[in-house]
Amino acid sequence: MRTVLLTIGPTHAGKTTFAKKLAYRLPSSLIIDQDLQARFLLEHYPDLVPTEGPNHIKHDLTGWLIEKAITSSFETIILCNANTTRTGRKQLLNQFPRSTFRSILVWFDLPEAILSNRLTYSNRDGREIRGNSSYHDIYQRQRIESPVSSEADKVVRLRSTEDVETFLEHVTNSSQDSLFDEV
Image (cartoon, one colour):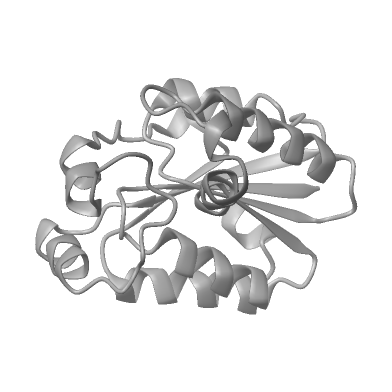
């Protein structure tokens, strides 16, 4: 059984860093990171990217990448993005056949103080941001709909950097199957 893992959380929660660490530890995995797609589109096709509203081009590109990843031999697919709404998460997960994939939502529910500190001392260049927004602006606008257990086979809530490291150790030192034993 293959695994699809979806990150959930605001900007600067550590979703991309987590995805990279996880992919490094799981050799047969693939990260689909919407920040990279946004950066690519803004860099190479800025006239096609809408200045307001949903970035349908980015979402279409994600759908195409998911389609290709599903037909590949990658055992684990890591969807790295904020994934703020239940509806959006459901649309993403509906693309993965339940007969082939089990799903994990990894919810970065970090304290405000940690996120504020990360935003203040960020080294990110913001090339994936459309318009004149800053990461602080994006953070203020983001509203995360808390995941519920019925959304996926497993929901993991991470409240600290220690939780992140513990999860990474657990998922890579034992088999991923052990995560689903509790389901």
